[in-house]
Length: 186
Image 1 (tube, rainbow, N blue to C red):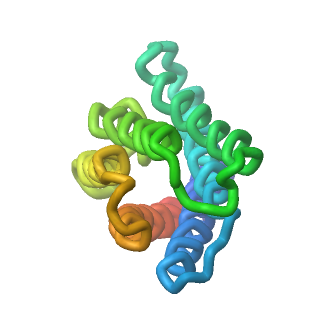
Image 2: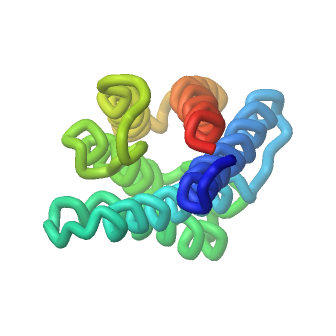
């Protein structure tokens, strides 16, 4: 029988998996022109949930190093920016149509990816797959860099297809990994 602590740990990863599933389904719908203006809110909530759960892990490890707190706080802050700022902007019905929006979102994703590669944002307390943080962080850096570097003068649909594809290449493995960990620790 599973202990109460392992059930709580499994629940953390199950929540991340469910949030990742919502983001993945929304991205797939975007591919087929089924625009959802709430996508940025879902993604923002994913970053907030990941940041809060990472913060809980840091707190349970009883560490007070600023580096350990930086990753979860950046993830929470980036998620809050997406949840609060984007819906109330003039561009809420579109993707990332402005240079400022593209750079802001790309920077948030790149910084979170960089922190993950450096080990400041923890995917899990003890990774089941060795060096998984390098893979997930590297894909996040790639996604953020593509968003920042992609010229807005290109065809808008091409821009959408490129970043949606990279985002799916990131969120689907992360989501599967979260479900796998929830299953393993239960």
